[in-house]
Image (cartoon, rainbow, N blue to C red; front, top):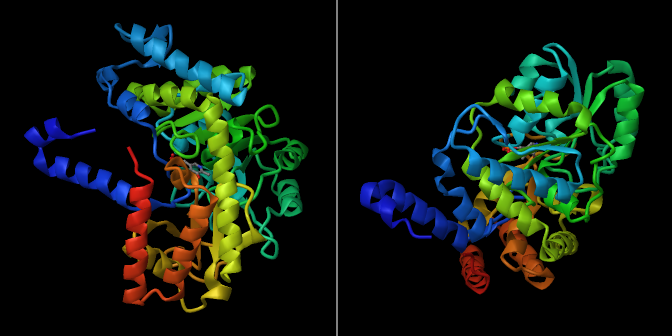
Length: 414
Ligand SMILES: *Cc1c(COP(=O)(O)O)cnc(C)c1O
């Protein structure tokens, strides 16, 4: 897509947009929450629907002229129902955080209790962090992953639920490499008389494709982001049983939001249709195969991985054993210099700070979209190793950078 019309009226923004497009093409995006949408999703997102006010829901809007907005939103809803098998879907949340907000607003009163995973262990800000409205509005207790195994400490969770008596238990994570056992968390929530929200932001695509077990039908509420593994452009989604449909819809609008971002909902509709194609199942399977190849190769190269591997789209390397002098931030910065973009991350039992933590989180969704298979991913693992082994070796970094250029040419974007 060219930015010629932007350039005519605003060269500064056009330059930045063109440079961002180039940056995405010329680097390896390994941030586990990122992906590349199709040109069809991009085109839908930049449509004239950005001009349209459509407060309300299909067939019951507060404005005229909504017939096409209705069509688009209904298609997004119907396709989401088919993808995840949910009774009721709301596609209006502006992001995953707003989707979570809608559930809390619908089901909790200020001062009610949330039990969620510690942020340092892979949780999310919107699960009760003090810097987020959730931490300021609700009483929050946290469960942990077992520092030895890296797996969710399900028994600790159950005990914590028993003593804390939460109103809602939150599962679903940002930096957790293993399959989540929804039923075990549901049992703990049931025993405590609490609702259960499964936030599948990262794994929406894996769940839709059946390569990760689905919480739909087991838990009360499922939320997600639409721009991560599901590849449908920036936004959020809430799913629930029919009995909560009215509560959820009125807490999204008018509770938490005004007019929906109809152009983004068009992107969701197009992305969901793509995800219903058989090719998407192959894509999701390849994401996991690539992630496992990455995990195996990094371990062969001496890295120590939280939980010893992965079941999903990401690996979490704890650098403390393998590279005690190198922090996650050091690794992130050295890798960014060579065009491998990922993020420093806290690890279970973190001994450094969240700003300069001990781990790196490495994901395969975006590279898999570009066509990377296991052999290419293993090579990327070797490139990562060369840089993290010697983050100040300029000659080695120059060589890696050259190889990254070749790989990005071999697997072009757009
Ligand atoms: C990414 C993520 C979200 C949503 O984030 P937004 O940036 O608001 O879309 C919510 N929960 C988890 C666990 C996440 O990883």
